[in-house]
Image 1 (cartoon, protein in one colour):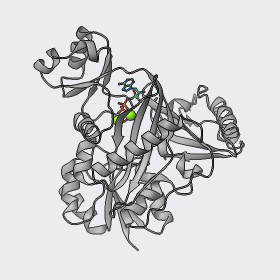
Image 2 (cartoon, rainbow, N blue to C red):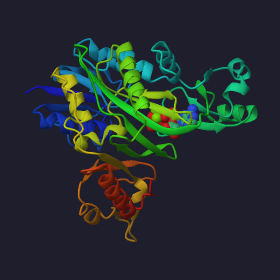
Image 3 (cartoon, helix red, strand yellow):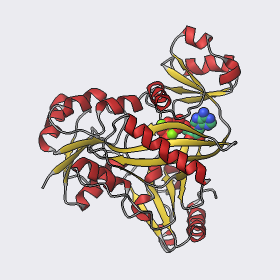
Image 4 (cartoon, rainbow, N blue to C red):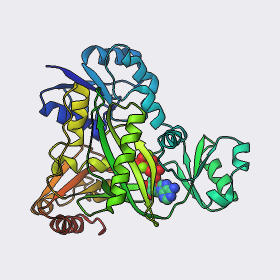
Length: 381
Ligand code: ATP
Ligand code: MG
Ligand code: MG
């Protein structure tokens, strides 16, 4: 059988590996960590840095196609792989997603509204900030941020200058703080032939900059916003000539207008519900894109809610052993599907797994999800 390769061994890689294996593919994972969640379950685990040319050659030589689960993989590594094996998404698309400034420029090119923003990469650009339009705002590092890391909220010029100092004066984007009513995201998958399918719009709740809950069901978001978000996500993928799974995050503002926040060139935490609530998951879509299989439009068959399981829910027993949440009680509830990533160290804010809750109706799914949340010690939503 064919082997599909993935750069990065985190939980997204692990769930890609599971989906690939279910469809009869062998897998190869490139990740330096011996205990990486994907490496642990893959047929093959190449333990090396992402820019190790020998390891990249080994991956290319053993795979029919290679993808990434990690947007901060060096674009040069993708370019190098692409010389000898089909790689999707392409290095050029990943390079844009890696840089908030380039990403925003792409959104603007696609005609999708973005937050008012400015690039801060010098004393001059710092001094030139239009405080009237951009403050209060959020200063975000242009590269490498995730889960709200590399972001500082600033209300005044003085705070802005301090924040930039705090972020080691790396290139940053200052964004105006917008009044959010909701947050949502859209997952699209686009094949090499340009065929494009999508999952329904997902409503996301973040806590402390980290995704906490995703809810997906009819009537969850205003329908005008839903149509606009789907249309925008498709334009963004097409404008990149994107191949693979792409997630686009949006803000719905107090006045109901839609603003694009950022994109991820891979499956996304907010799409995990699709493993149990849709007939094709985002990871199967990724496999289909890689393997050149048809992309049939997925259908959501159940209202679904995803609860992220962060390290905060685990604790240490007096003897030092790690105590997991009460799965026995949670899994006694109908429609609860537990996904754990095989991580043995639980740190606050670390994504250890997720719980997908499905129900016959949105009300039923919500009632169960709230019960599960109470058992787990997750605040109600
Ligand atoms: P991810 O883990 O999704 O990649 P990230 O670290 O790249 O996250 P963002 O998505 O930029 O961070 O921001 C994290 C959260 O902070 C957003 O989901 C939103 O709740 C809030 N936020 C970000 N930018 C703004 C803004 N301009 N106005 C209001 N809230 C914002
Ligand atoms: Mg991000
Ligand atoms: Mg985000």
